[in-house]
Length: 147
Image (cartoon, rainbow, N blue to C red):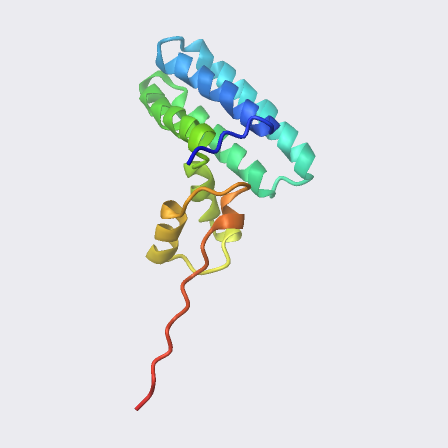
């Protein structure tokens, strides 16, 4: 049930980010800026490591950064609860909502967008690696016998 992967550097990045976001929602607003800064460092690191801005881990970090930036203005800071809770869920349970959302973008999927795809994407169990590696395949259509 738990997927605490403390041997991975990415897990430590997310842990520090989750702690910063938690401090931010607890009233230390400067922690939001630090979380954004760390996410930028993480984005650059993974872009260099993966060798491409199109790599899935880079895309996840890019969209996560966009969520943090959209949440930064004072009237939008209530939105920081979303990545705070989501990052803790990813750290402890391995369930990354952002990765699941990113996997639905047209360039990341191999099948047409459908409610079935959305259901499989959001209700499949967390897997080690990324959601693209563990997404259940589309159920095979059962052939009908023609009369």
